[in-house]
Length: 79
Image (cartoon, rainbow, N blue to C red; front, top):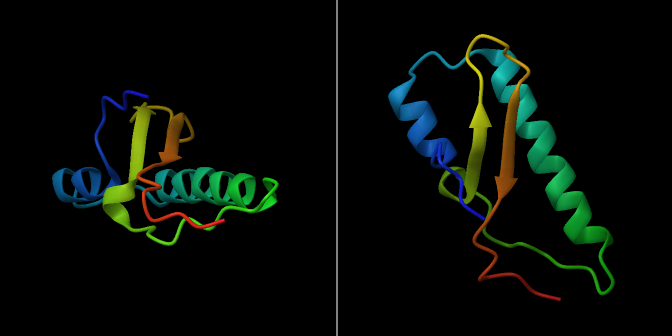
């Protein structure tokens, strides 16, 4: 899945003052993604979540709640 906005590390580096609402929306998406993995049968443990593994699919800097983030790089995941 292509994420044209890059990862969360890039977003924070480029935009030093990321709006708190954007960060909350990103964390909501990350929590939903991890919850999906944990509720999968068998449950999946990502095991490597950090800024460079959270990808931003879309962002609207005007509408602070219009952001979509996904958790990626599940190469270290365990069942």
